[in-house]
Length: 278
Ligand SMILES: N[C@@H](CCC(=O)N[C@@H](CS)C(=O)NCC(=O)O)C(=O)O
Image (cartoon, rainbow, N blue to C red; front, side):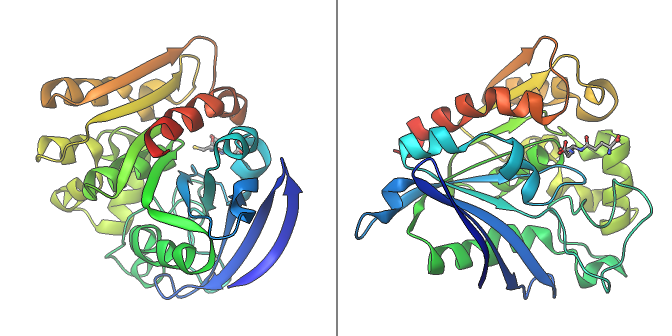
C-alpha cells in the first residue's frame, strides 16, 4: 500500500492510498479518514464504509460528503473506495453508467468485463484485508452506507453478508437493478442476459429469496431527478414490509440527487451508525 496524501482534518487525518489489487488486476485508490482517537496507543476503532455512485471516485464523498466532524467526535474510521477499476487497459463503455466509474459492486462474469470488474470481491474481501492490516480498525465493528449505485452496493453487500455489518443505511439507493434502466444496462453487461443471475445483486430479490436485516435507514430526496425511473424506493418499502424488515424511509422535500443532499444528512447517518457501533 502506498500513501498518496495525508491531510490533517478535525484533529484526525484524511488519507488517500493506492495498492495493487489482485481482485481487479489494477491499481486501486481509496480514502480513509482516521479520527483523532486513532492516535491513542493500541486504538481499535469501528469502521463506516461509504460506497459511491455512478461516475464517482473515492474523492467525491471525501471532498463533498462532510462526514469528518461527526466521525472525529465519535471516533469512527470512514472508508471511501473507488467505484471501479481504472487504467488504460481496463475496458470501458461510452456512457457514464457502465464500465469505468460504474462497477455496480458485482463480480462480472462476461468478457471483456470479467477480467477487471470484480468489485464485489474487492469490497467484501480484498479491501477489508488491506484495512485490517494497515489501520487501527476493529473489524468486528463495521457498518456500511452508500449513495445511489453505492446505496445498492451497501444494501446488497449487507444482505449477502449477515453478521458482518452492525448496521446499513443508504442515500437515494437504486432499490432494484432488475427494475430500472441503469440496472438492466449494467447487470446485463457484467452478468449476461439471464436475469436469474442478477438476483444475487438485487436488494429486492435477495429479500424475496430470504435475506434479512434487522433494520435499514434510507434518506431520499423528493426532488431527485432519478427517483421515479431509476431509484424506486417504494419497491424496497414493499419488500421490507412483507419481510418484516424495519425500514425507515425518509422522503426529504426539495432535495435532489447531489452531494448537497448527501452532505445535509451525512451527520444523521454517521450518528445513527455510531449508536450501533460504539
Ligand atoms: N452524470 C449523470 C449523473 C450521474 C450522477 O448523478 N452521479 C451521482 C451518483 S449516481 C454522483 O454522485 N455524481 C458525482 C458528484 O455529484 O460529485 C447525469 O448527468 O445524468
